[in-house]
Amino acid sequence: MVLEIEGTLYTITYFQHVKPGKGGAFVRTKLKSVLTGQVLDRTLRAGERVNEVYLEHRPVQYSYRDGDHYYFMEQRTYEMIPLPGEVIGDDQLRYLKEGMECDGLVHDGRVISVELPFFVELEVVETEPGIRGDPSQGGTKPARLETGATVQVPLFIEEGDVLRVDRREAKYLTRV
Image 1 (cartoon, rainbow, N blue to C red):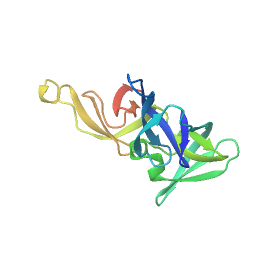
Image 2: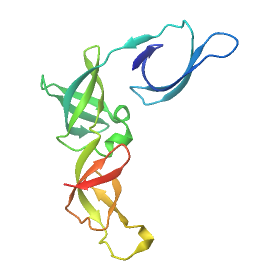
Image 3: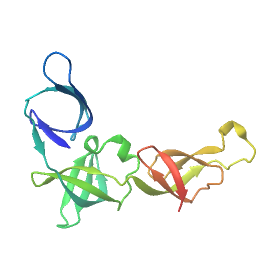
C-alpha cells in the first residue's frame, strides 16, 4: 500500500496495531519513501487521516546510462524516461542490464520509480576455477557477473555461464 504523508509517497513495509488497556488504539508503522528509499518510523493515532495513493504499473525497458541518470523507454509510447540512480537504488543497479524489462511505477501520469524483476539472468565474467575437495569454501566460490554484482556459486560454474540469480537476496538459483 502506498500513502501520501506531508506530500511524500511512502510504502508500508511493517505495521503493528496496538490497543493498550488505557487510551485509544494506534498503529506503529515503518514507511519507506518511494522516491528516496529513506525509512521512517511513524505512529498513526486512531482517527488520523492519511491519503492512500494508487500507483499504476507500466512496462519499461532499460536503454542506457548517461552520467547519474538511467534512461528507460516506456513500452507503450516509446518515450524516454530519465531516472536518477538514487531513485532506483544501489541494490537494484547491481543487476540492471541493457535491454532489461522492468516494472515502472506511475504517479500522476509520470514514471517515478522502477522495479527490476526478482529473478535476473546474467553471464559470469570472472570466477576462479573450482577445486574439488576444498572444504574451506563450503562448496561455493565467488563469481562476478556482467553487471558487476558478485554472488556465491557452486564450484562447477565457469566463466561464460549464464546464471539465474535472485536479486533480492543476491543468491544463485540455477544455470540457464
